[in-house]
Length: 298
Image 1 (cartoon, rainbow, N blue to C red):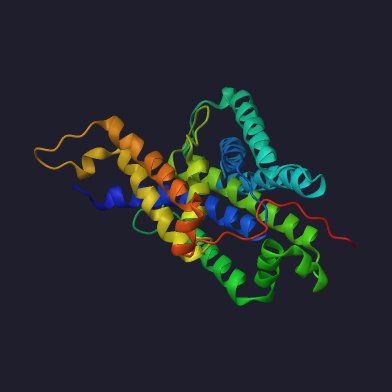
Image 2 (spheres, rainbow, N blue to C red; image 1 turned 180 degrees about the horizontal axis):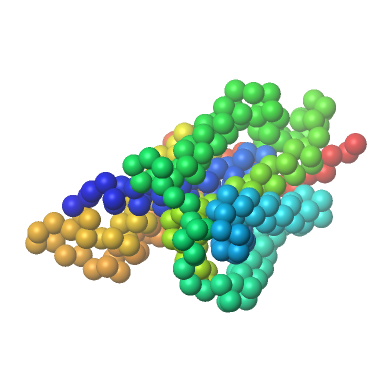
């Protein structure tokens, strides 16, 4: 049966999705799609693990993960905003680059993180990053929907030509958002290797970035729904690792069945949201300019 230890573990798993999805939501609200979210997480995970292992400071590890993720986000921004490359192709390129780079560079680091590099829990088994993550989501919600800066971001994602006429610099807004998305993706990867599973092995994200991407669509681009979706997928993910938590007497489902559940749910979410008729019914209207490059004329 479910106990508090299981709850803490699935909450920690949820934070990986939540941090990554928060950055991607801001990305998409500005009109930029980054399907390479998995790559951002991989780079952040390796940088955080390497720095924390070397220095013994998890906070320096988190900083390193955020900076590395921000740099990859900046590269995606340069390709998709300045060079006007296809955003899906650019994002896939970032993912492939990150997968190969982290697999090669991370080989000497394989194994568990030294104890002094791990972030310890402070309240009921939860680490400080859990509370910081929740605050970040609240700030993003407030910023997007209660400030003029959020209106600027949403304008850039809905109709950049109108935003330009209003005196906004769409290119600058989108660059800021993609860097923020990169920082959050790197932070999610750092959370994975410093808190949830402090062990380095090739491809430690195991598809979490794709699930976080699906959560953004699932949330209908609303932070509060994204928060709930992250906890749902975090529960499903950790359940796949510890299926015995819900196994009752007389019911013995295969471990492999549980491992499929998060990805089956991801496919269902993306299938539903991709239907224009269904998305209109449930109010899941994506930003009108999402995925469409635009150049300011100033």
